[in-house]
Amino acid sequence: MRVALLQYPIEWANPQANVGLLDERLRAIAGQADIAVVPEMFATGFCPDRPGLAEEWGTGPVCQVLQRMADTYHLAIIGSLMCYVSDDEAQGERVLRNRGFMFRPDDTPLYYDKHHLYKSGGEAEFFTPGNRRPIWEYRGVKIRLAVCYDLRFPVWLRQDKRNMYDILICVACWPTVRIQYWDTLLPARAAENHCYAVGVNMIGMDGLQMDYNGHSVAYDTWLHDVAGFEDYEAATRIVDLSIEKLRHFREVLPQWEEADEYELKV
Image (cartoon, rainbow, N blue to C red):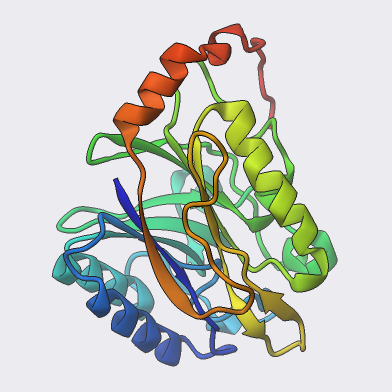
């Protein structure tokens, strides 16, 4: 599975500009990757107190362009955006979500709604959390998505021995002042779940003068960083994550078989 990590600055509160920036980056890697991963709220930056920038899920202009890019460049696109939804989980009510997504070529998009909303950043005041924990299968690989603050909660991301995932992907707007936690939590989630872990964060200064230095990363089965971003580096890295190698690793070290059974209540 070839995964492209796209680390770059986000234009604050400017969906049109950000969609254009993403299109340029995806065009440059067409045919080279199976999946492209972009930061949390890639279309706007992390501005949850501006719900006027949100769009309707599935029918909004950003969603339509994402689907067109997935079809054109023949890859899946993973990230998050803020949108209004009226799905079954919302019981018909129209609510605002920080919606993680996978737009797939020539197929319907998949989604995961951020569960742990960042109260200190005002997110919980405007957004409704999701309670589903889907595992997506794409080209024979099982993927679990986390959105930024979700990464701090290991039980939420814990493997189920009966339905394991292969790659944990976390998309984020994680600021420099707390980057040491990002650097610690992502490999911890990879180690305890016997999976690959990919994290993509933004860089630069946002409209609230919050600084982001990136530290996007991809961990292999031995917790080696195979992406290798520098601080504040605007770049795309493509990593090849071998599912055969991961399965062999799990056979040699079958620690997942000894994991505790648990029931998660949400």
